[in-house]
Image (cartoon, rainbow, N blue to C red; front, side, top):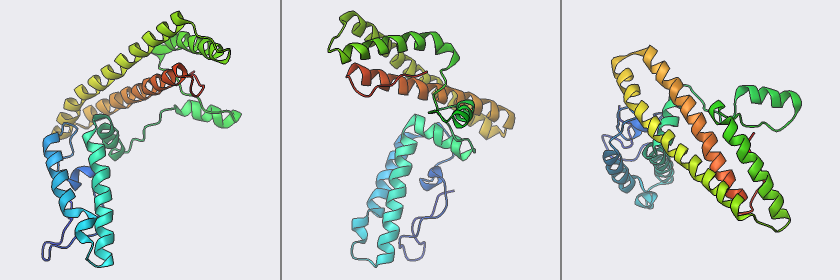
Length: 228
């Protein structure tokens, strides 16, 4: 159901009402979106809800247009991005993604230490080796030195993890068809299965994304920090 942005009788802008981002644009709650339709709806509503349109209206309408316009931008930024859209859908299903596991959270609470990210099991060996290389590079930076061979090897590692990141996004999009079909068929069991697969994949992707960022920081001599 489309959210109501304007009064049917007088055409005045209305206060934002509780609705999800899909309903805001009048779209079905699916992961496979017609992004061209989303874009058309966005620009159409942008013209109608822009605060400048209500510059001469009363304070109430100006406030509502500002709120509606802000929500419009948030909704568009979320739904146009494949990963953000998936994360948002999962939140609608009651799933709050955490980049760090509950076991790590509990351990940190008991010891008072900073919570550390849990390395996906299949990446343990690669991440261990990478952390050793990053520590060596940071030590060299402190001495004002650089080992070209080490820099080249870490650069290759970064490219490898970037490839993994892209593959994660591709795998995620493959799950959209399964999710949408299960939702359309009312198959709750299949929905739960696909939901869990998406959560696992997103957590893995988030870890790799942060790892790529941290590698870049160290290569640039930026903030120190390794994943463990």
